[in-house]
Length: 488
Ligand code: GLN
Image 1 (spheres, rainbow, N blue to C red):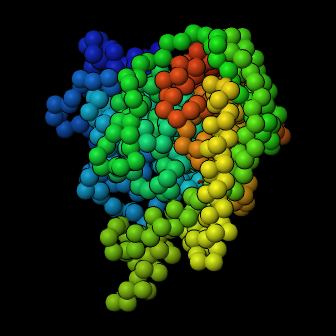
Image 2: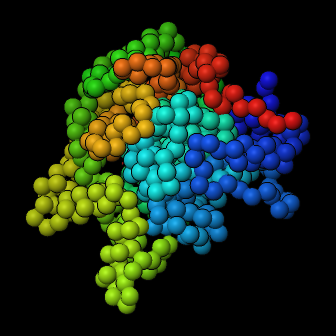
């Protein structure tokens, strides 16, 4: 039976505004749902409201939202999935979270994630892996795996994530929900714990495209606290487009590479749907995009090695060892506080930046980044969008790739190029497919990328396609968040 927890954010906010739904009762129902978390999706959940009058006006009036634990929240534990920040209470709140609150949203909890957002499976969290609600033996994707699992598993109506190389889109794909990475600079990064600052961008994980648009409208905008934030010009409207006529969708040749058979089938079927809606499919060339992974895994670790230098046991979180010896204290704190993947990235990044190697690695990777941005610019001269599968595979088994970092990095093959180019991209659920090697069917994501700041156009196309696919309707019986029943 459909209850309030079945509503989308847009529907719930409308009902609350019309006083057909009590915001207090609605929040309480979600709090109970979140308290029953069996997926390890949450690291912290909100206590019962103190009774203080809450702001209910705004487009998100009264709607609870789960927030990735990478966003600083004043007085609320913020760990970025790392043991080194255990017990850290930020003295201020991230702009993105503040904006959600200003639009009437309420923080429901802080979600689990790969440590410092480094990972594609959530197995790099210092607080244990998150389980995929479709199959608890499988990963939810990463690094925003807690946010994706919470939304997909019926533990939150929507969530905030961050995406540096795919961390919103890939877990959204693996969990069967919508994930939007906006243009770099659309949303403020102030108070978002930095991984690779030239790539990090915040965005929504939601049940549908309309909710993604609703959250983006609340989040976007210039912020004096982040000089790289510019916002999106013009008013963002909720998408309503029903067809794709007159729009050209570019399929790069790399869309075939290393893709599971089932994922490829769903991808092909989605291209046919686009044509059915009047869209045109054209081939495009992105000759440098296949170097994306190599460039990203030099640039992101290089920036991380510098950003993570601040965790020295002096200013934040945990301090270990030392006994009066400062250097020894740094060493013990960092070697005990950071997990293996974070240490790997710091070492790779420091090496890539070291004198004598800088030009060969960092400089070279920057050139590839420029080439990739040029590839997209050339493609967008001929097409409106570039489309690919979001992830080469459906959700894989826990532990399947932990011993092989390169196999893990290949998850990001289709999402990293857009991050390097700074352009917006969305993943929408396009169907179900069995993994290579067999097993029950799992969600497949379809990625659509657009030119910088063309979010409105991107959301319109995604909406038309989403409506035609009807994923939430067609697969209602299998969708975990649809099965969540309220008590009473
Ligand atoms: N999986 C990629 C990485 O490990 C992307 C992470 C992200 O987008 N934060 O770096």
